[in-house]
Image (tube, rainbow, N blue to C red; front, side, top):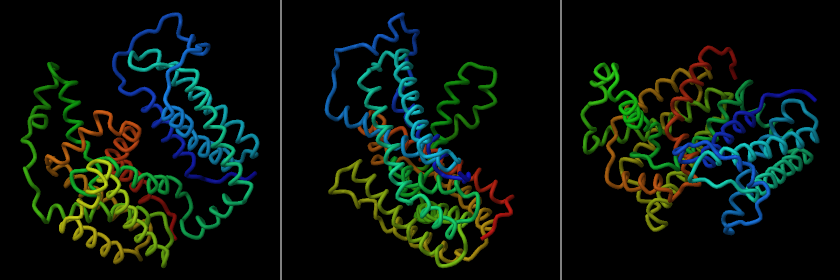
Length: 368
């Protein structure tokens, strides 16, 4: 079979990272296991809940789909891709269960291993069904009409963007709020070292303002929407399809932000984020995106770099109001641990990874 570039491969790797985070969190108290490290494979005593069963079964299903898709798109026969996906899922689950022996707060389980493997089987078979029905070929045809060559990485970033919005943000659509965490981690790492005096000016910087200027909040929201739109323009062909991409970005931004607010404060407050400044920023970002819809892909990549740089600067100055602090605490204390790993890291790192990707696109000769 012919080989094709596919967003399934980068998404599969990202999903492996999510599985590792969910399986090994909180990454503290590492210890050497005793000689009974493999005893869990033969354990007949189990404590489980229906939620645990469903979570372990469904948790590996997307990996099975993505691993199968990556295999088929790389040129493997369908049955080989199924077998490889199942083997990779079982091996990944076994690795996670073995590593849990090193963590006092995690308990390896043969039931988890079996359910994870079964979930991978279901995912691979689902991928096979989609493949046999010709849906993968149809998607490839649509992708070739809508997007330029070598766009898999950009498509993966666009898929991940709404996931990052599920993690609490100080301002709607304001991804990239990682600098304060980086400062804290660096302060702990350099405490008492020879480099501490050199880093003090940044580590001891004054806290952020208590409230943002309205224009800064509007600009942050606008850039938060404009950045994924420009990323989409950098990998898409010019024409009416870009107008659909802008509409899709607006819809996904609205849905993800509303869902995040509902998770944090309850369904009754799901639309509490819709302040006048937030809505003005959304409207402004959408209008600018529509005005730029005709730019060539390489120019869109350059504009996207500028938008992401400005977004990161503004986000680093955004205040942590009491509501943001409350929702952040709820996530980090485990209330949403099933989503915590993925949404947190995507929300923190998405602008930086997207900027690196767009930097590569500026040197590309692919145009549409």
